[in-house]
Image 1 (cartoon, rainbow, N blue to C red):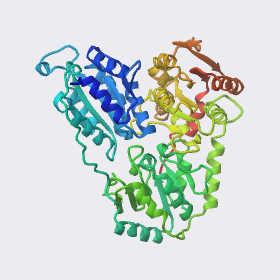
Image 2: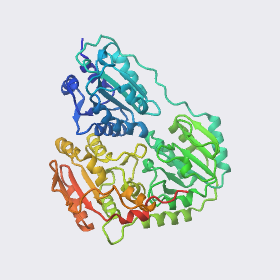
Image 3: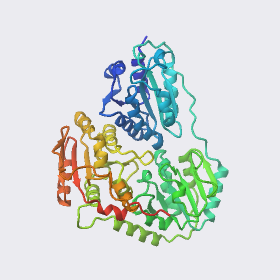
Image 4: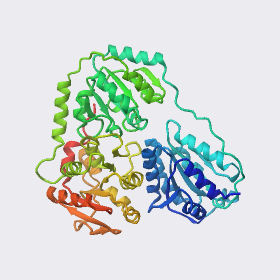
Amino acid sequence: MAKVATVLTDLLAEAGVRQVFGNPSGPWCPFMEAMRTGDVAFVLVSNEATAGFMADVCARITGKPGACYGTTGPGATNLTTGVGSAWLDHSPLLAFTTEARDPMRHRTVQMWIDHQALFKPLTKWTTTLRATNLRDTFARAVQVALAEVPGPVHLGIPEDLGDEDVPEGAMATPEWLGPPLPQASQIEQVRALLQGARKPLLAVGLSAMRTGAWQPLRRFIETQRMPAIFTPMAKGILDEDHPCYAGVLFHGLSDIVAETHHQADLVLAIGYDPVEFNYEDWMPDAPLVSIDSRPPDIDRSSYRVLCEVVGELPMAVEQLAAFPRFDHAWDLQALAHRRAQMFSLLTPVSSPFGPRHALTILRELLPRDGILTCDVGAHTHLIGQLWRPYAPGNLIMTNGWSSMGFGIPAALAAKLCLPERTVACVTGDGGFLMMVGEMATAARLGLPIVFVVLTDRNLQLIKIKQERKGYPQYGTALYTDAYQPAPHYFGVPVIAASDPKAFHEGLETALAMTEPVIVEALVDPDEYNALILKPHK
């Protein structure tokens, strides 16, 4: 009979998993040995949070479950930071942790806490693996992780399980339960409401991106010629020079975006997930029509929901794309003027050297199909409006979980999954400090990634919020006045730049390199204040 470690490795490979990310412990050794000789690689990272983030991003890119591991206690608690990203940003993920042996589960044991209780609030399902039903439990875990809405599953592994024998037997094939088909009567109701609206507005969210509904959605927009607003994680669905493009909610210059959406007399939400931005924070006084795989999460005591199409999202949007064009009262020339105004304000001025300069130069030099991963901070609000991905999936961010430290692991995962693509990461210095240890991972794996660090020496987003409340700056400074860029971090070289010319030259050099490299942009952050955290309603 085969051992648990060998069987589990084979099951992972059959499920399409190519890497398990983590930081090992003694009980994990049999699994690493099985992976060494099998078809799944174990990838060592510096922090288990990175393992979760990387598994999340691998799942987004491949459509297969991502996989990560953390040991007992502190390994598991670190892992929850990355697993939470898959929970709120909706990626299928298998999180493995070592658990205490059965006789010790309710005893006082070094490093041991109840992992089942720990992972319950941020997974779709949590259970403990047993040799006797390993295959069936794994099959169910994959099914649960992939089922709509996708998300993480936690699988505890008792510390002595890896060397146990697995009884022979075929793996059960779970019944696949996808979302229901959209009902024809509901589609007809959408048609009637859309036809009767004077100024219908399209609001597109991350579910439209992750389900692939963006293809029929583009055809629907081309036919109806109605303004479309997007959440940040839906960027790339529509070209930002398109006549119907109205901007991104919540991020930079959202007050200009609001000039469009406050005119709407009907909001048609397609794949809109309020995990990025609640309806109540931006919706005009207009009724809602929701098309998604689940009912809309909205305060129904304040907003009217006229129609809900709950079902298979791409199929529902395909049916919408077959509608004839309906007349409306939108002035697309006025929309074009607002769009031009927004892009003009996002264009960098001659001096000083600020984040707009850095992002504009990066966009100029990064190939059109290049992938940008984005961390969390003031720069995220700028990237959310300024950056042009050119295609779905070319911008990878977390806007549901929104954890600082996401950008670097996301870049590592993207390069592993898509080695032929150019990958860059933009992070603030705060997020960089959280994950700087992963420079050792990038160097060890030989991943040619360009890490752009926007150094402004502060937690800038919090500093701005303090200023707007009239508080003095406190608790946000990252460095002393003596700070200077380092020559390298764990073998990854640093190219420092304090003006646009030096940054342009440094970035050209970095993009030509065949190893990971950091380009540190010493930016003046003052421009953030005029561009981000603007009114939404």
